[in-house]
Image: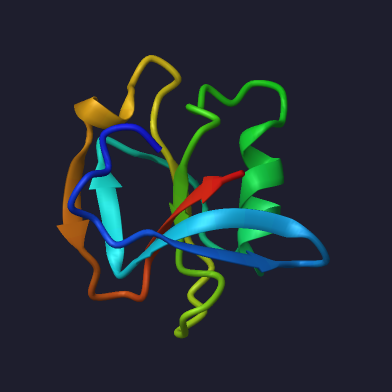
Amino acid sequence: KQGTTGYSWEESSCCDGFNYYILEGAWFTPKFNLADTIGDPYTCYVLMHLPGQNCNMHFFYANSGEPAPYGGLCRCTSRSNDWADLSLWVSTSGSSIYWPK
């Protein structure tokens, strides 16, 4: 998780073995809107890997898992973007940034 100094990342897991670091209450730009009805963070992670997606596979954000509310958002950033290219924002919709292990 390079470039995350000063942020409060926590280790967590869900969905029968999907392990990740989570930055609760945050989202980023620039972003791609992948879906609005995802049920959990693992499904968002899988969606990023489908053919035709141009996502950076290192991180994404969603509001489909802990902590509540479970809104179903799934967002990624372009494959050409790195962590340093992102602007972080405080979420008012329950989004969290996930960094899969």
